[in-house]
Image (cartoon, rainbow, N blue to C red; front, side, top):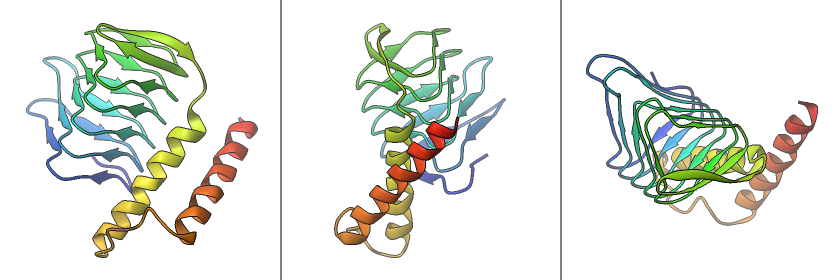
Length: 166
């Protein structure tokens, strides 16, 4: 299932032979992302996530408002807590549990810092949503100009207020 406003970019692949894949609202799967179920686990991706270029998600769970950076791999049964960032080329082993608000790096991946990334990760997801709408309309230059700057500023204010309100 794909949530409202989600976008799948060129060459992203989603496969589920015997269980399910869920993609949350306003989540983007960027170019060459591979999403597949595990042997016994579904692949569940929360809302407002950016799954960046060449990421592999295999039977894992990604919380809301996460950014999974270029080339990262997250394996069966791993859980990435909300508002987290998994650094590029990180390898998250099977069954690893990452707490909310983590920054994760390495092979094998480990938490290297704790920071609430809610605002930055939501703004990034909304940039990709805006870009997807622009691409659908034939506009491939949506990341520049006054409208772009105004949209970014408005989202930042909105998401900072949401975070403060709890």
